Length: 266
Image (cartoon, rainbow, N blue to C red; front, side):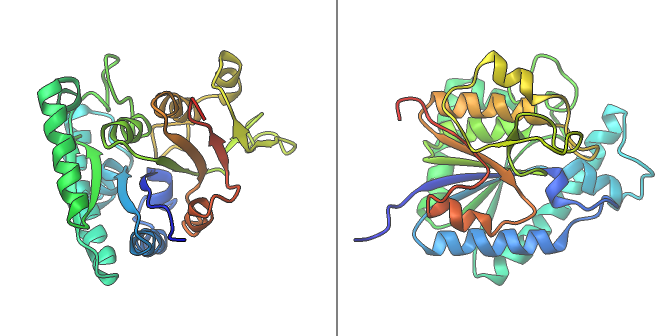
């Protein structure tokens, strides 16, 4: 019996893509490209939602810290997008894969005609065996960076929106911790990993805590919002540690990894 073909969206965050110096984590990038290429070779369709543009750009511009002014954030994003895509093209190319960059603004999704056009572009790329790499267009959009009136919030929510748009079977959010805990494992040594969540409730949000790492923008709250959107649209969502991209093999084999948020109706 042949393997069931799946369409999988993988979101990787700044804390996974960069090291403590703010430079690109080349080992992780290489591992991620190899694993995603191998998963595609198994017959699955793969989309990657990638953060890291501002952090990588700030480092390449030799800024002493992550910029706080809007114009400098957008300048850093413009530089970082080039650097990230250069590295993705290089690493995926080592495994004979072609990648494509898609930068989205909220209006690209909110306006029905534009949303349909974006979806058609995704489908055309997937039909050709090309791996789309998606980010919000930070160099011209302020919604992710500053605005309170924002569709995406950060790339966790963007990955959920892309999953719904592309009718994905699975969303995997690679984080800097193993999954969803009943307390912050960085503060409480006896924190317990919750391996399966059937429904996201107010109590779930209360457990989530605040922001994530200093290099990124999102914490567990944003991942819960993303999981809530995806699961409401019938898409299983897994949150797990991005330091070990090889865990994606176990996920594709339906083994227990990280925290599974179960799609409604399943």
